[in-house]
Image (cartoon, rainbow, N blue to C red):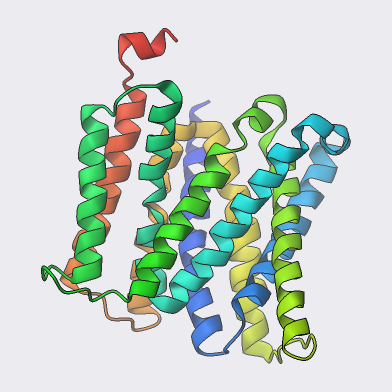
Amino acid sequence: MNRRFGIGIAAALAGATLWGFSGACAQIALGDYGLDVAFITWTRGLIAAVFLAVVSAVRYRGTLRAIAADAPLRPRLLIFGVGLFLSQFTFTFSVGATNAGTATVLQSLATVFVMVVACVGARRLPRGLEVTGVACALAATWLIATQGNPGTLVLPPAGLFWGIVNALGVTLYITSPRRLYAKYPTIPVATFGMLMSTAISLAIWLAQGAMTGGVVLPPLDGGAALVLFGGIGFLGTALAFGLYLYGCSVVGPIPGALLGAAEPASAMVLTALWLGTTVTGADWAGLVLMVAMIVLVALSGSNPRPRDSAQ
């Protein structure tokens, strides 16, 4: 059991780190190769969907058929797929408007939004640790956006906008499939969600092509193909998604949330060391505050009040 728990921790950490790596690769794909956001989104989604479908076909073949035939749950699957689409689509926009490190830190605001949804659903007020966590998140966003200079918005408004929308998309795909996960294993549910996300982004890419005179695949040299298919598609989406979901299924959602803090940390370190992106003291302070927010919210969830645990 201890060995399995350790493997779960390592898997969740590896998955979160690979998500951060995908952000750095997306920055290269957008900046160096000029790839389109919709093209990147449907390509990475397709690679992830195929990977998850193969795993599901090997381990959960009967479950795949059961989910496909479960008509009452299809609206929830659609909402889940929309959430996955929004999280990936808007994240790439956020990276393009800022950089991978900043985008992943802003994405961590999803923890606050998830907490709010949980409090509204449970009809309770936030606990002390949760309020402190929200304060850390707001302070982190303010530091990154203003670099500590009151009244001066250093972060581009488009970057702040897409970062917040991205966090809302992450919130949607985290909170919407609770009943799905209660009935079916995580991996086959995620397979259908990723397929729907890919279909939406592919439709947008085709619509863009139709409005601009025709669908044309962007030219991909060896470097662009490696970044897109290897870095973003397989390592940063398919493998990252599979490892993180498996790790969370072993260690539980609260430790999983803590381990997810590796994503913004890895993205900020990678963009600073690998891509040469300037990272200021205010950026690092914002990262530390975001990690503190995740820890506080997770600790609050691990220590419920007596009346909460009785419900």
